[in-house]
Amino acid sequence: MANACPIRMMSNYAHGRFHCGTLPAVFGWARPLDWMKIVVSPSFIIFYPSSDTSKPLVVCGTRKECRSRMHYNTFYTAAKTGIPIPRTRLQFRWDGATHIIMDRVCGKALVDLWWGLSEASKDKVVVQLAEYIRQLRSIPPPPGTSICSILGGPVYCWRLHQWEPLTGPFRDEQHMNLQLRNLQPVDVFADVVKEAHAKSHPLVFTHNDFMTRNIMAREDGTITGIIDWECAGWFPAHWEYCKTMNWGNWRSDNREWYPWVHRFILAYELEAEADRALLNSFMLRRFTPRRNITDE
Image (cartoon, rainbow, N blue to C red; front, side, top):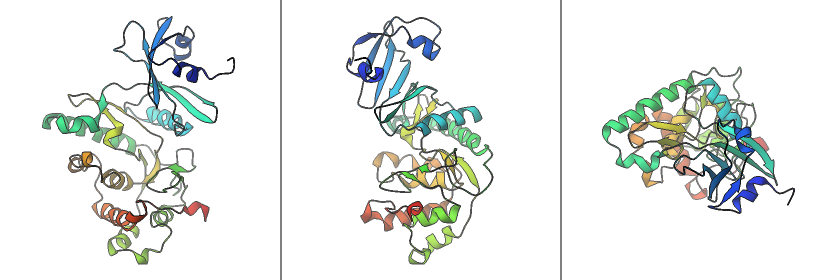
């Protein structure tokens, strides 16, 4: 079909071969490739040079939630830091969904490696992550108090809103705290929430999903990439620690990870305790706020 999406057409040939003489020009590859092999999964397509399947070139994301914010956030962060981030090669919309083609990061997700790493390798991981967090925090924030995406709009965060992860932007930290309390007054919550929500913190550039599933590494502890930047934006300084420690704490594979987090992210124990109290208060309602303050 003349108007068929080329990526969708490729997905019809799982583990097959197709002619792609024009792709090297699009992606800037140095040598010509007449044929490539593809492997298809439900969420991405991996392209290989047909002569060597050990060196995948790119991944094409096909999930609908791969919004343009992934492209903007990775481009912005790569320009501002030396963090290993997969480069976006192409972005396009087709059939109501946004697709991106980006470099595939070698290695495995840290969630699959952490339990088997030696203490020396874990120390190596932590030292690298501390440097990456330092680089993120060194990016000057925009003027004002708005908690927002890098473009000044809504942020993408399931912790902040249950039904639709796009929420905000928030005028300031108190506005975001009201969202975390599901639009309820602070007086109805525990004292630790009252104390934490009376504080204010500087805005810092935040990954906002700094979990082991989004950290790629080799078995010797070398970090090969930090992925999934669609949630990144400008947040209060304590938020990265709170979310890393609390969001996903029901997963057993995170338990060995938590004692190491304070070594690369500045700890905010009071704020983290308050966040746990809020999560517990909403436990019977699926963990997170159901109302969106920006809809009120």
